[in-house]
Length: 445
Image (tube, rainbow, N blue to C red; front, top):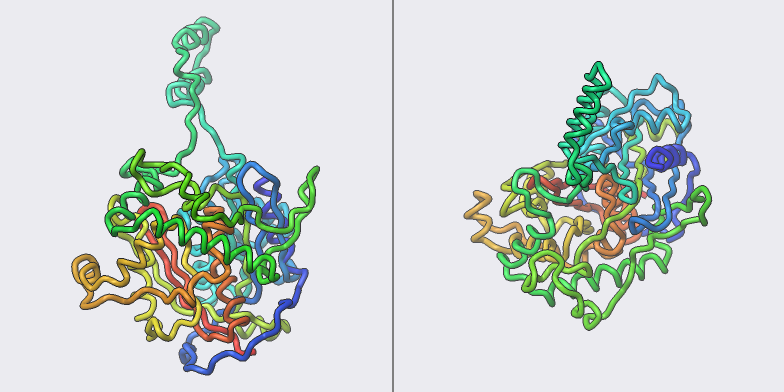
């Protein structure tokens, strides 16, 4: 199933389509093009509907002749042992030439961000001109392992030479050995689940339960409006074998504050503030983007959507600052690009938890935090809400760990076209205390 998801995601970057909404004239500002540096463009971006794990399946679409692709790179988090390099297996399964290299990256929730920037690096270095990058997560069927004790006995069986030795190993089995090891969204270094960390972070920044519920309600409301208005143009319909056609995200569920207030804390009980309603949910999904050098894209007759400009990766304390990646990454990427917060027309931040978003907003508005923890003279400032995640976010659309980054970048490109902006900024946190930010520039219409 995981392979099928990516096979079709890659295989469909050939069914080209136009945006249903009219294009708006882009604001005229300085361009970030640099002399002697290749312009790298986003030609197209697509994704499956993001689906609550355990419901239906997924879909894909791609858009370029297979023999024109130089390289394929994909991100994923919960890896299937049999297809650890899922990008390569999916490419072969989708009918791409076995001469096209492919590799898989894993960087928690920013895995497809890493896939895209890896592609940009290969193009900038002159190694490739046309790359399919993306990500996939299939949390409805995660690998579940035997216990360590059971694994030891099973491996030892292969070394036995006699029937008596095998009986001896079987005699060592205990009932507890049959308990499986389930994957957990927890930090290996601290043993703490991400939800628990989000709850502590919200408390540290004084983010109330009401603030979190309000932001979650906003996310679902905006996502529903965008879905109903046909703005989520990157979503493509997919016929799941033996199932119905899936054509839209199925986790968008606007609720009232009263409904959300009834939910109990999910992690720190009984006084925590993070609940199922203000957290992103386990999601199945795949995404793909076609990244090319501008010269190659124009030579092939394609009309790029956006330029991929400066990007940064950051890392900090995974215990107390696990989810503050956007706060650390945003000022760094703005400095690299020579821009300020006021220059950014579109913001798209990954919404792991409403509390995480609100904590980052407060950190970005704090001179004290900037001076104490970031070594900066002053705060960078929080994004204005009238520019922020206006088509919903991970809380409502869903968050397939390995696929979200491409959704963020494609959404920025589409919003810049729709709203007439010139610069967009993507930012995301990730397990391990890591983070990412990228500046995207609208392509002239």
